[in-house]
Image 1 (cartoon, rainbow, N blue to C red):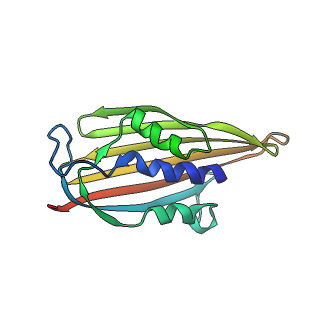
Image 2 (cartoon, helix red, strand yellow):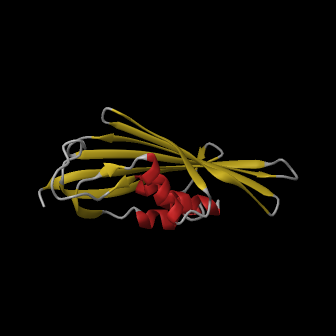
Length: 172
């Protein structure tokens, strides 16, 4: 589960909170002052909800979800920008497989290289879906980790779901 922590932290940056103070007419969200809030929605192990405190690395993820405010124009990163952000500190060798835009919706999906360590094989897939409006963005993300003991064949899965909400609160 350790590699989950790194990818989850990086995946939170699929939405870029930067841009010029003047509005880009081609980008749906308006320039201005924004409140950015993250929330852990659920943690499941083997398909069953568990207390998030029992999940390795969850405190690191929660720390990244602090509410903050900024002036700028948020946008959803394209595939190359998202990959470049992951590559900056990506020990799990994750690859963004696709970023798609359709109207005011954006989706992203990716996978991380299987890691074999001490007889354990682990894999992770990530998925995000955003709805972008002029004054509100909701980005739902999920991370699915599977772990299998190579000798016994026994395995386990975990899914973590989070939501990032950005709300325009005025002009800068």
